[in-house]
Length: 321
Image 1 (cartoon, rainbow, N blue to C red):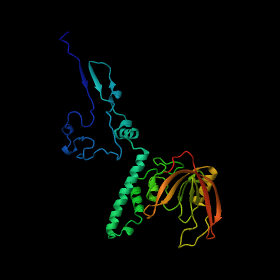
Image 2: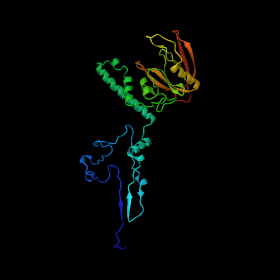
Image 3: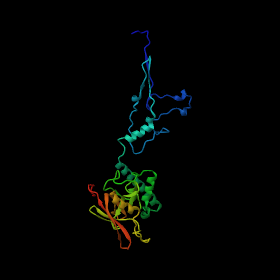
Image 4: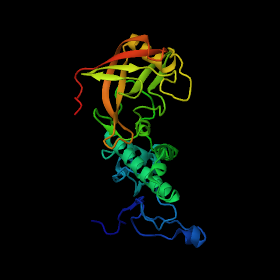
């Protein structure tokens, strides 16, 4: 080897992930005030002023940035320089985090989302119940009145409800036999969005199709269940009201949607209202998918017209226990 020749050198400039490498005070290099110097707190460090946001309920697993795939190598000259790549805008930290969340194997399943929102509902309800009982001096009956509506409003204002888009057929995360203590819980999980009406429906094109019904046996409408066949009494007419004059039911809104579902052979979810064991209201059980077989108008004991709908349970579904 000829010692008179100067050996070639290789210089490397690399970008290290946040928190790695030797700390360099760039304030002295750019004449910046000390408080504006570049700081790089670790992700999740509560001492940082602007910690990276972490979505709630999702476990993120960070992988090392694949910089080697973007390394640009210059031709061999006397001085070889390996330049650190410029990260494309599509792989910025925020976009990369979104991709990680989307592709994460630890993302909650639809079932886990439903169970979580029901847990939150119960938690909010319990707190509101405790607060109201304290204000009412411990009057249990008055304290628990319509707290479920307030709990629903709290969750919706927080954007915690799931399955917000109406759909025909099954609802992600809901299983046959699921029990709900309040009708408002049906709305928060996307099973039945109407808190006051028994028939829920949606518009598809120019027609309205029923998505779900809440049927209650022995509730004044005389809904009946018998081995997978039920007869449901339509809505309207103030049939069970004692304060308003009873009127004839009309084939409009939810009643018309059920009739159209029969003609279109569209599936309808059925939620069955049952008396609670303590006789303090009702609980609601998801009974599965039904098909409207026929409907007719008849005169009830008050001399008013009501609509009856016969629905048959789709075979092959899990039985109710």
